[in-house]
Image (cartoon, rainbow, N blue to C red; front, side):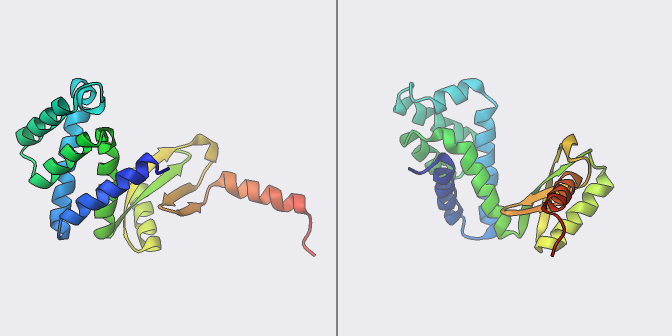
Length: 184
């Protein structure tokens, strides 16, 4: 069975394919983000659109009216109505996130999830961003998190690449090597 994130990725690929060129795809992302943000900022709207307890025709009418009010292009309107038709409106935030990843990849941007023992100042963040950009040969956007159990150092995840320079991991590796005994 296919999971929700894989279904969201398939929808995102379909919307991505509607864009034509990079600027048009970026515009579709901005429009989809506008729609997702508008829905998530209104609990009443989320309840109507995300719960199939409301008749499908009512949900489609609400989605159509919202898309028109926001001035969204026909591609986003059609995709939104299709989501309602398929009872998959709740995937909208995931589709937006998947579409953002596709647009960023096309533009040569990647997101690095960075964990440190203490918050980094702006200068340290910029140095880390530049170092990671050189490492992966792409423009890097940092998403920072703090985990005091690291003791020190940095753990960075960029897609499937994990760069673990934490003191905690270094100490664990040292301990494992000491338990093995001397190399012969």
